[in-house]
Each structure stands twice: as C-alpha cells, then as structure tokens.
Amino acid sequence: MRRLIFATPILVFVGLVVYFATPLLRGTDPSLIPSPLIDKPVPTFDLPPLPGYPKGLSSTELKGQVQIVNIFASWCIPCRAEAPVLMALAQNTHVPIRGIDQKDRPEDALEYLKELGDPYTSIGMDSDRHVSIDWGAYGAPETFIVDAEGRIRYKQAAPLTQADIQDTILPLLEKLGAK
Amino acid sequence: MKNPLAVAMILLSLAGTAAAVEPDEMLKDPAQEARAENIGRQLRCPVCKTESIEESDADFTKDLRRVVREQVADGKSDREILDFMHARYGDFILLRPPFKPSTWALWLAPPALLIIGGLFAFFVTRRRPAMVEPAPLTPSEQAALEALK
Image (cartoon, rainbow over all chains, first blue to last red; front, top):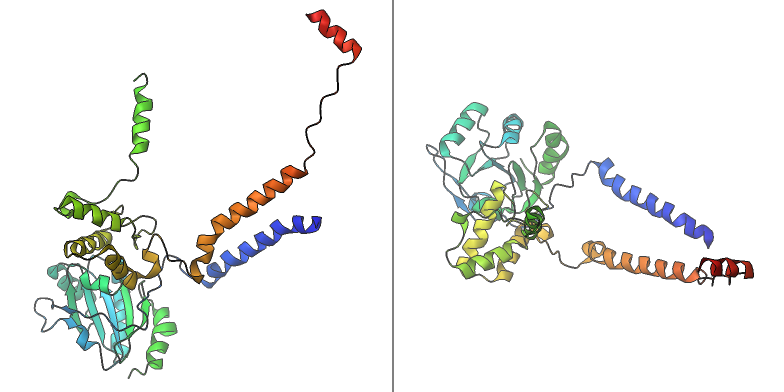
C-alpha cells in the first residue's frame, strides 16, 4: 500500500509524458482545427470572376471529377510561398485547381497572379469571406480535395509544400481516381 | 478617495475583457446587438484560439462577427446561429463544447481532481494524532510564574 502511494506520482508523470510526447513526436500541429466538413458535400456557392476573366467559380463545377480547391489572397504571405508548389502541381497533373480569392481587391489579385503565375483552372472572388466561412476556413491558404461526387475528402489549413504534394496530395488524388 | 491610485486599480480590474467590436459593426437595434454579442461570446475565435470572436481583433474574426449579426438581423434563433458555426468549424468553435466521449476528460477532470484531492486531504488530516494537551506546570514553574505576578 505504501509503495503504491509512492509509485503513483511517478506513474502519473510517465503517463503525462507519453500523452504529451506522442503528438510532439508525430509532428501533429495542435493549432490546426479538424474540419467537420470532411466527407460532406461542398457548400453551395456562386462566386463572380476577376475582372477580365471569362467566368468565376460555382459549386456546380466541383462535380464530375476529382479537383483541388485552394483558398488564397494577394495579402497572404504564406500563399506566396505556396504559389510555385501549386504551379508545379498544375503542370504535372491534369487535376483542375480551383481558386477562391479571399477578401482581395481585384487589382491586387491580378497583380499577384501576374507576378507568381496562375495555376488555377478558374477563380471566384470571395470578397466578403462568406464562401470561405461556408468552407469552414479560418485564414489563407487552405487547400481542399473534392472527389468526383463533389464531396470534400481532405483539407489542409497550411501552405502546401513539395513534401505535402508527394506524401499526401498525389497519393490521395490517385486513390480517388484522378486522371 | 484617499488613494486615487488604488481607486484607479479597482476600477481597472472591474473593466474585464474589452470587446473588439467596432461601432460601425454594431446592429442599430440595441436588443439585437446584445443578442449578437451574447452569441459571439459563446464562439471561439478560430484564428487566435484563446478569445471569443467578440474579443478578437483578427481580420477574419470580424467577418465571423458580421455573419452572426446578419443572421440575428434575419431573425435566426441563437441555437440556429450556433449550429451554423458548429456545422462549419466543429466543436472547436464552441467555447462550451458538448459533452461526449472525446470531451469527457475535459468536463470530468476538474470535479474528479477535486474529489481525489478532497479524499486525500480528509484521510491525511484524520490520520494525524489529535492535539496533545500540554503537560501541567511543575511546582517550580508555578512558583516562578507566581513570582512574576
């Protein structure tokens, strides 16, 4: 009994170490919020195009094939780091990348796309963040993978890196049957 | 008002957390605005994580406040607005998360720790021997005491 009393704090301590060390060693980022929208259909929306572009983006286009939806903005610094990764992805796959330009001024967005390249099949302007909120976004960049039935299958609320593309995005696109 | 500094400190401590809502965001109807603030205080800011959306200065949160106010003005109930946010952001957005297996530890740990600590304190104090009565004074001590009087 006495031994048990002395052993208890040590056991509790070891338990806490295991509990806190696991996510640390796995590299889980506690600031990322799990999305309840995974496996749900994409929200219904219809966003206008950037000036000079033929069309914007609406939820009806997110059906029929596997697609990537990327929320970005010209004011978003991590988006700039992500831009070359998206450009390479657009060149190496046939999966459409749809852009949601979040709370941007059209002229700033056009400048951004001119400077860093335009990997998007089409872009919708979400000038008041209504659609971003419907996607459960809380910043930019955020990337979603939508399957052929128009369901959200994956979300990353952080800029995509080349490693993310190789380890997560491409395998998932292949699994979902992207061509 | 002997000590103006102390008075100022007390008044400051009463101020609580300041709201980040700017005048131009507020609804014209004070009753609706009060309802929107009450809902906003139950919603956690997804950007800054430790504040409610009423307290946060983040640009994104401003748009969340606007959505809450639009829905209040549209006549949505508190429950409907909280459900709207919950459907998009999950349990995270609720400052009072629902009671379910993944939140059992969160809800039950404080009372459980209080009970364990209380039981521990109870048994430790009970085991301690009762206060011993001090020994009566010896005749010589008594004499010394009398001499002092």
